Length: 505
Ligand code: MLC
Ligand code: AMP
Image (tube, rainbow, N blue to C red; front, side, top):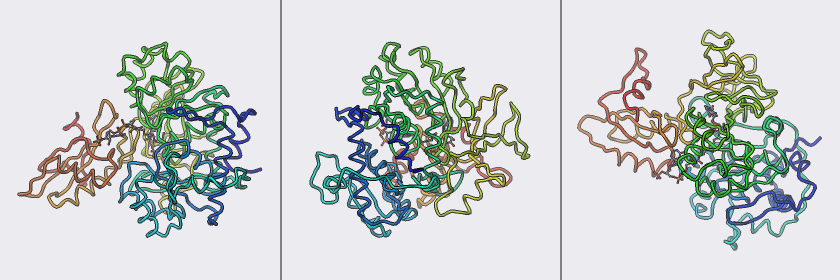
């Protein structure tokens, strides 16, 4: 049997391929046959490049149906898709490209100059742009090149453990690591979610998430691709557009910020959501208040679930049955989740400990980092998530904290260490601590606490301006505080909990 994920999707396409697979906000329409043909053309183009099996195709492009089709083409051709956040700047892209050594890099036309320079220096063989179709005649345009290719392609035969994608994440510590996900990791999770969330052929997914993370690329898109259901594709989350399309949709997925923003709009009401079957939230904690207010305003109980790049989805509140506020639900079928106390014993209900997981969905390891991979697995094969949680008596898991130093802002992960080292490099600075403070819109906001050298001056606007020129904008502190020293414990470790108390917004 062909374990290629695309083969699984194709086997589940509707029998009438003229039905709509993707409709966009600007009234473009892609049938299932369009998806099949367009992905075949791109797969033929990739295949014509004579790449090694398992070659990485790194992609930093704006969200579009073509971007999703490029993902499908990469699967079909047997290569490895490596999506990159569109907010990443020079230093970030440079790190990912050097680390992943992609043979092909695809970027937006406006970034071609600097991205191609990085890519060619790092040894990539091909750099293309993914132009909007109207932009036409760019010689490096992947779509132009693919237009002359055949629209027939026999999907490459893949083994279950062959890599399908690499997603960069900082894991529990240190620099970004590429989480390697196989065809079977992704297929097994998609199949489990199909049943768990009751996907139906006539579902219409409102897709407002970005395409470069697990949530938008896998959880949302795979749901429709595996079920032959349609998606309405928005280029990004925009409350006006979401409200416009809700009456035509049956499923919506989002990070908690989406629900917070929808609630701020007085147009959100029961009748707008009358066709909706399921609202799903994940990637960051959903506040009880948001859960409750959403139910009051729309009549819908948001289903919260929990996952991560290394594992895709792990735990979910039930589709049928009680969805408990403040919990992420129960382990999905085939996923073994345990809570381990600091003394190494498996926690009983009510005990707090590290969340460890095992299952067909758990990744193949970090790209070219066997030592880091080994560190993150227990001797009996469980992956350490870096999250801390507790099961209640009914088997519902709550995430109560993180053992990893991580801030989740609007669903994006920010690693304090990365920002701290940039601030510490500023000539006026002795040291810094970057912390997450509660934020009404983003859940947590990145904030910096800085100690200056004697006789040096620096203001927060300058810190922000300097950082904005170096890193993705969502990582830039929303607030900067200056202190004479950082609080430390007896071991010399900065006590971030004290800083969080002192500066809470
Ligand atoms: C944008 N900004 C953010 C931000 N997004 N700041 C902090 N956190 C964020 N998440 C900043 C920009 O830097 C900019 O700042 C200003 O906000 C406006 O930018 P924008 O582009 O207009 O923002 P907006 O479109 O409103 O985006 C906010 C958002 C978006 C919440 C809609 O961030 C989003 O779609 N997040 C989803 C992330 C996601 O998909 N996560 C899944 C990860 S997978 P300035 O200063 O320039 O004005 C995962 C596993 C799992 O975690 O379990 O799912
Ligand atoms: P990422 O590495 O981007 O895949 O982010 C994964 C992390 O997001 C997890 O380890 C959790 O810390 C967090 N996360 C995902 N879903 C939830 C949720 N429902 N509640 C709380 N945290 C979540």
